Length: 90
Image 1 (cartoon, rainbow, N blue to C red):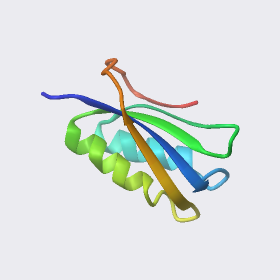
Image 2 (image 1 turned 90 degrees about the vertical axis):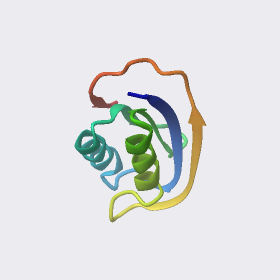
Image 3 (image 1 turned 120 degrees about the vertical axis):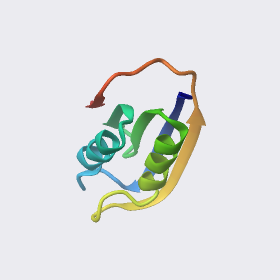
């Protein structure tokens, strides 16, 4: 199976709207490993690792986020696979 790892930085109204917890739930439902965290700049940063299809679905989800979020931009960067296990909220 092919594995892909992408890092995303999400800007907009993405903190204090259940973005991280919702992201974790979405990732776990798709079998995607990695992590998500709030950054001091008011952004959310996440890493997704898994099948290219599931990782792509997570990036698409990030463009909308949970109902209370207002996403303005999602910056996506490919990274080397690190064999993550599980999905953490940091």
